[in-house]
Amino acid sequence: MTSFLDRALGRVRLGGWLAFAAPLLAVAFAALITSAVLLIAGHRPVAAFSALVEYGSAPRTMAVIVNTATHYYIAALAVAIGFRMNLFNIGVDGQYRLAAVVAAGVGGAALLPGVLNLLLVILVAVVVGALWSAIAGVLKVVRGVSEVISTIMLNAIATGLGSWLLINHLGVVTGNEMATRPIPEGSRMPGLSLIPGADLPVTGFLVLAVALGIAYHVLLSRTRFGFELRATGQSLTAAVASGVDVKKMVIAAMTVSGAVAGLIGMVELLSGSYRYSNNFPAGLGFTGIAIALLGRNHPVGMALGALLWSFLDNSSDALQLLDISKEIVAIMQGVTVLSVIIAYELVHRYQVVAGQRRVGKELSASGAEDAAAGTGALAR
Image 1 (spheres, rainbow, N blue to C red):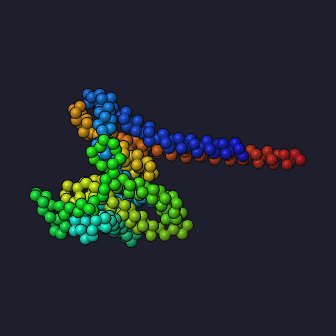
Image 2 (image 1 turned 120 degrees about the vertical axis):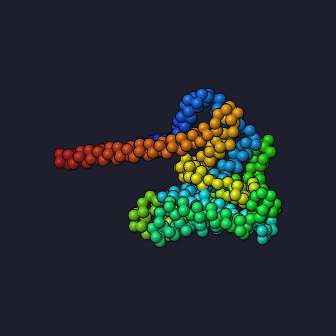
Image 3 (image 1 turned 90 degrees about the vertical axis):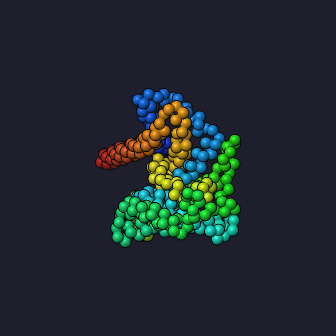
């Protein structure tokens, strides 16, 4: 019995080390590929990486990295909720932008005073994101439309609808720019002085992002809803056999994913620009997909992935001082995601093969023991 437990614990430790080492090796491999690209382009890799680290360690840049990573992390959480159920919510980009323009219009109207207006803006963004994402869930359940196709189409519709709302109902002309009325000063998210020496505060939405990460983990790992969501994602047939209402889970998962997506734009709206215009950040939903893949849908893994992605994005300007194209960072980001996916797939295949071998050995040992017992009984 003791030896069996020792072997089991050894396998768990080995699997844990492999899962931990896979992303580190993938990042190292991405750095190796990037170094090769730099050498081919006639640049010194050590100088380039040193410039990135030096620029990224400046107090103000660190604050910008954390603020940008907060965007990215919330986007990754929105995508990961769908991923855990094998749903590909490609429409996160449209969901948060439509939510942002509506929420900005409500916030700029100052319907409520102070903090109440801030809470109203956040609530409106969550509701709009949830309702827009739920459309794709309903289409999948009722008409069998792939959520990939429907969410891509809804992205385009959301962009057009947002522009129409801004031009005809919610926007005002300020100079040469069309934008919503600014959020009143008393309804803005306060910043946090977390980084010594930085003249830029860290967004207060960092606290919300941490809370969302904890809620994500608890929801998926400690609740019936999370169990049914994961069960449906792993095996639709088994979930149906267990009594899970799959259609209900599809709509619920898309709705929750969209609700979280609605919060992405709030970081910029309530901590940065304080209004919505055509220059509002776009593409954060697609960045969230990359970070969710990079972090393997794990709340801690996605947090590390968001920080790495943000560090590379915000430190890339330092490369221009060395006459190096900042697009080299995009190469490193892409190679990192691809390397992590390949590394985890190799770990998964190794664990499957190791499990098959283990079962085979245990069956062989059990058969030998049974044969020995049978021979002893015959001898008696």
